[in-house]
Image (tube, rainbow, N blue to C red; front, top):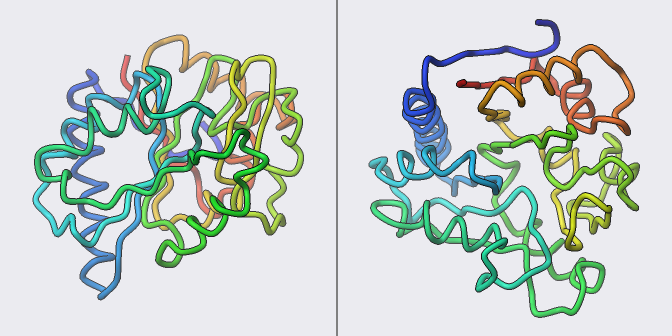
Length: 233
């Protein structure tokens, strides 16, 4: 495969353990440099095993800030909330000592929350230490949805905004998302996918060019190094 560094694992447990070890090591390295390490994670069912494995890693979690790649505009009491997913599957065991920085606020819309959330992200220490992306069957990643009302702005590699609101038919709820430049600046950027269907979607993304059709292409095409992709059947 071109433009990516693809690694296949024999099962999802092996992938979760390896990815957790690599992310933990990256966090340790940033902490050792004397600063706060930062981790941005994605929602959905795919990262649960990874979250469980990472939550047990032994490191200085008090020096780690965890945030989200994107969020549905719902409170963390909602079962579709990514913050709820992180609270239930990552922020326990050793990782319970980490600081969580949510993207959802009490504003009535993501558009109204942009100044507040932009400042939250700006206050994180330096570029993200690690960002772990997911991918939908339509080729979206983060909240970069085909047909999204702010898609062109969100995937502009020269854009200055740190966060962007997003509305798209496939998104169901309004969303808020980190922008492409924030993700590309991460010291470690990983795409985590599982299942044969997602592998087929990835192959289709690699075979085409227009990022508006399959926004994961914006990441692949603009990443400063071949995108690290981990997959298990």
